[in-house]
Image (tube, rainbow over all chains, first blue to last red; front, side):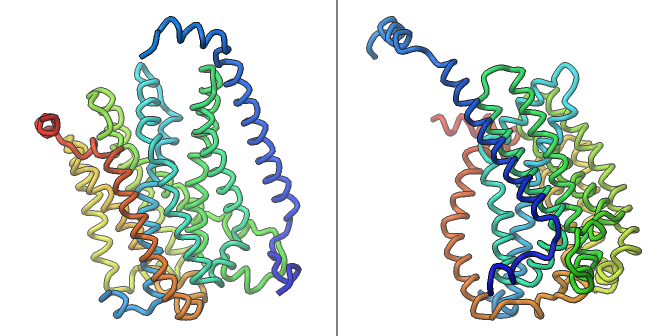
Length: 58
Length: 352
């Protein structure tokens, strides 16, 4: 069976392709934005070092 | 193994599909219901309600959807013609459902990783709105299959954009029925998730409302089936098992309602689960042996017996890992909901 023979008889496949592609593009963008926010909200190395010396070794 | 001797391999696979679907409804359904109750969270305890929902759902929601994957894999391996008929003629509601599943899963995860409260609230919406729409579509697909329209459409029409297969009164009412079932189950489950009596009463009230409206929905589905899904409706009325299943379903519904009223929440949960399982078995019994009415049956459509036997072995092997894992997961995260008023004593035993 060739791909052309196996294709669904449902019409409007381009719309499905468009919807799924934009959905995953959107999710990818969201992941990038969230990672950046996490990165910006996390402490800088010097802040971490300061916190570590304040607490002292366990 | 006595079961597989009495049933053909294809029938055994069909029974296992139904069991997996029942577990999906009991676990995954509650997962959708959690999103549903997130929307109308209001009043002084709105934040507490949302927190309870998120805590109850957090550790288990991904595992809950394993059961739908099992049903779909079994369907396309064991009954390819039924799979192809359903996936082509109902591809619009199924695609929308898939988008809903993806969106709510991602939103639930994004919510935990976002920084500000405003953004978290926004992800909450992206989680709860698809939580309403996705079960609506799942029910619509099941209702549409029962009408026989998808089966007829595939046989008669050429390439098409299929709306008439599912945009009909009966499938849409079955969609609402499914949504109502899930909302009811979740509200009942949530009464056992908290020790705060006010919060518990919020969900007790929601469960009672959902139970009453479920009765109305069941009546609507039953009467619409007479017109719109008569082949399946006849299956329910002519089968000798039909009346006992119907009476038992009603009895468990009443038992759930009474035990909620009397605040016997553990009994309410068991009777609500039995009630929902019986609804599902009633539908399956009505449709048996049809997979996709009017023509595709378990016997006519099954892949070769060798495939079915291999599938059964694969399922047996898989369940050695899956079942203990699920048990372990639920006993860790849901164990506390099995402890009753006597739990305090049980806890002190554990600590000794």
